[in-house]
Length: 154
Image 1 (tube, rainbow, N blue to C red):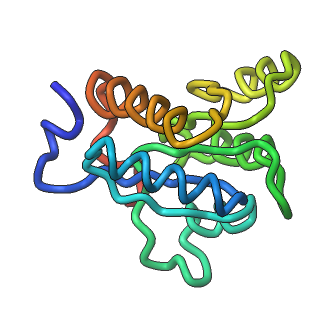
Image 2: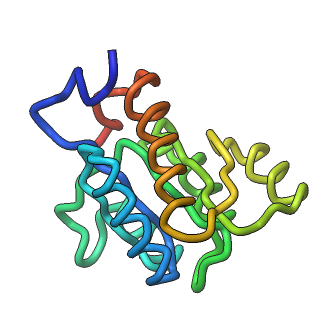
């Protein structure tokens, strides 16, 4: 049964860690067009993402995300460092992290899997490409995969 089917009373919380305003807009539009039942939260850099996840500063009431979409090339704190911190944290490590980046470097792919990324997706171009990715995410991560109800500390 899908996560959304098990928890139809609430939307799925997805944290998008992305510094490109254009890509954020495309992801919002793609999720809207796909009619995915999610609450999309955005962190614009690696430090912002960790504040959100650790509920610091303006994020004291932030929900614990069910899924994280993480760009690698971020200002302030690189996505690889964010991934390492997430996977080293006892309260965050169970949250699936999908790498969504422009890099097709074999080194980046291997490194992120060594850091325990759950999936690596090359960022598409244009709304049609983003819609395809969002539908894939919805079909797999939000419909097929069984995720924990909430990470510890939610």
